[in-house]
Length: 282
Length: 272
Image (cartoon, rainbow over all chains, first blue to last red; front, side, top):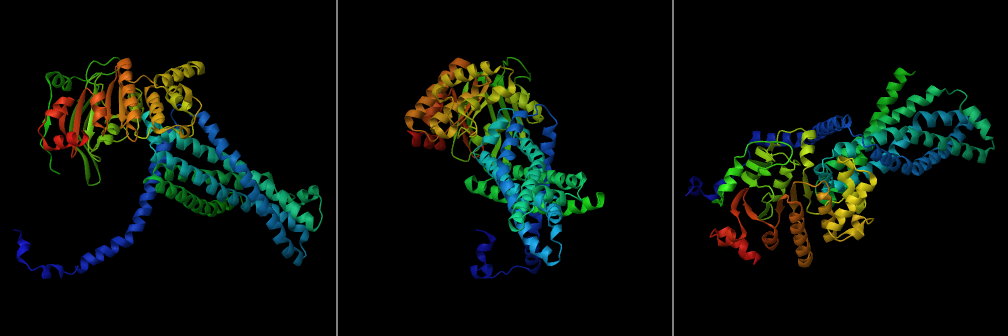
């Protein structure tokens, strides 16, 4: 017979939690989300390290990289172009009335080009690609993980960090600037179309006015900052996909979290990079 | 965790094999796989609790046991997909627990692994699936590779599925293709994770026959994880029954039948 057997049950059940243990429980529950957040960052760092280590060793998986360039680049082009076109047209229509109000109608092409090249084109491309590609990578790799395909790749002596992750990350880094240029192009083109439908202006004249105060260097920093967006989208998509757990439900969670986290970090990176660009390329 | 009473039937040959010295490369005369004091746990859950097991070259060892006894984990430890908490894993005399990734990949080339759900790459055709290890680890020309894939698919009775996608073929066919892929690099050790799970009795018998045929042709050491006692009886030279993270009994099928251990008797009775 145990020692407690002699104590009436009523007395045992009436034990109330001690104050220190209650405080500890409260602190633990408050700390838990922060702990999860730091844990996520730590694991992301380890994942990035594994990818970098794999990247410097042969073979370089050129064929898979080309397949991913097509998958991530070419197949995102229609959506990015459409988003760029819509933003260009909307910007043109909405800016027009304000500029006419202040008697600065002739400034419309320059305002449109500046806005698209410097901010709208890059951020819209980043968010559209993080939606399409981030979800795609998260779901594809997540599904491969839960069906043991990633284990099968590793078991056949191929490094999945290189074959699956490195190729996708590099494809995102290379393709984002090119997709941004496409978004810029369609934005300016459809901005002109929207403008010329209200008040006809030749395309040559629109372009001439739009790019009058723009240098080649104005393109460089905003366009190439999207390479960082590509790094974020590729890295987070692959990371979330390759750590998937829990069957098909886990695949859904990975796809969603890939989009949410990559979109969030693209927006945060945009703020930081704009500030840096203004400091280094005033 | 309390350990069950162990009933290990180890012969003199095996004892000699266990103490074989380390060697590396080329044709290996010693045991194919030696596990010593292997521990593996996930958090507080102890899955393997000091397993000792030896797989001789050319023999087929079937691992039986209830779900969750760590049979699949054991296979993943042997091929280095998971790391043990402690203990030693010798593959052809080479300790693999301390190897770096590149050295481990060299060892993996000597092993073939058939996953429980076949784990075929669903973005690749059947041909590309089987060609995957060949493309990465051999210098075969395209035509040589194609011939080898044809030969492998023919050996598992899947020559007609060359251009099909994994989603277009049945579970049994996927297992056959998975087996062809596992054999692509002519492995010396074959690891099979529930090769007949989820298949009807006729297809299961066909897969068993296929494994036996491939064993005779290639003389590999095989470790087969299964719940199917009939399958184990057909294909295995030796059977190990895992229970609570350890080997409860190890021996031939008739040794297991003769055992008076309650758990072994229950296991055998349930299947019959």
